[in-house]
Length: 169
Image 1 (cartoon, rainbow, N blue to C red):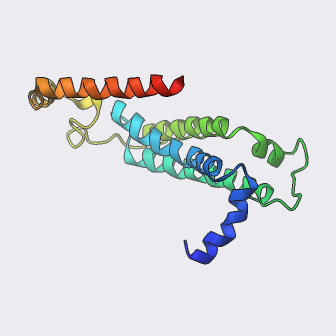
Image 2: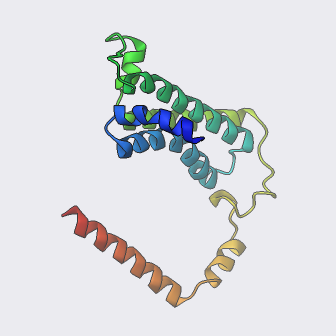
Image 3: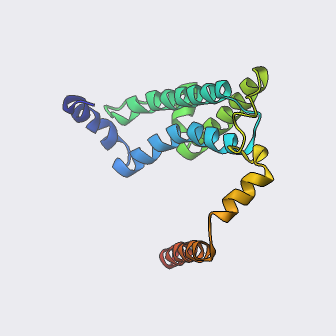
């Protein structure tokens, strides 16, 4: 983004509740399809590249639609959508609920498109999803770590839990 465009975007950010809130909203609109593709792709061997792309495009489009609806209101100048209209409802849905909607729609699109198209070649994805992991893969993975690796991983998890509990209060 050029400096001129960045400066012109400041009123949009200030029109909301600040930079942090704005960034959380943008992330909430753009992250769900990426999560769907990664998470579902790892756990389900039937999903394919066409389904993944369809989910990414759909989720990205839904996120852009929400940003386009929110931006005029955040610019200020007294702009408001007519109460009860579709755009007013879209603008007033809590951003995390809209994020959940993007997640569910992206997941549905990914599954539907994947099942409507050809299955991936299982020999090419062998070991990449939980459904294609063989005993040989499991044994090879387990042989690559030792007791120290397990103890240090447990220590890291304990430190994360301790920090969480400390800051929760």
